[in-house]
Image (cartoon, rainbow, N blue to C red; front, side, top):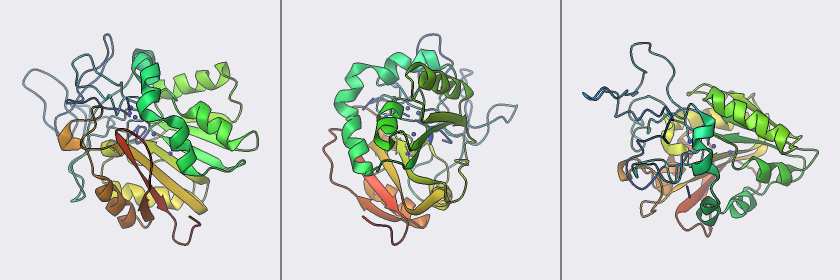
Length: 297
């Protein structure tokens, strides 16, 4: 449970999932990177590609971004979204549950590593506190949705221990490639990664204990329906943990794409989960935990 930094990563990675947005519009990719910021389904006259529901003529997949960089070169990147996961899907409005998804693409993993993995992210993302809020027990199976470059994977790997398992999910194949290589490089034997569709986390029913969604929720299309799919993937005492940016955060997506914690709670409830806005000490983000009915708190 992640395109990023205080978060781009995969809701994001997933759909209009996987990551981190900056204080202004998250629109620019790192130099050399192929980011496409979509404006709500229309192509800008400048020739920029828009994704609101479908990518240019090919109608290809919606963009998912895993952690977005703390700050985009134009000051509009996924800064909070950044290192967070980033799902970015080209879909329409959020079906009456807040703003539509923020569309952004993170196709070349190495281009985003400096933003997603920079030491400054630790100060506002506080990964240890996020993992503590997840209440992970050794041996659990955890999914990082919109995981991007895998910022949270080492932390989750330690939390579940040798008997547990962690899977990083993202809609971008190159992010999956990067996470797989990272797991091997850092000897994270209990970590795997795989690509998923923008509108489906691709998790089997009752297969995971925790799903982490960092800096990615605002990238997901039709969030209540997506929440229902996450619920189906949880084990009896499972939980979805959503971490995203407050309206006052200096990092994160554009203001009109930020989702209040209360709205996230309502979307999780609409998906059949029992939500709670938990107490935390993150300087720019909130944490909402959605549990299966009857799950221990």
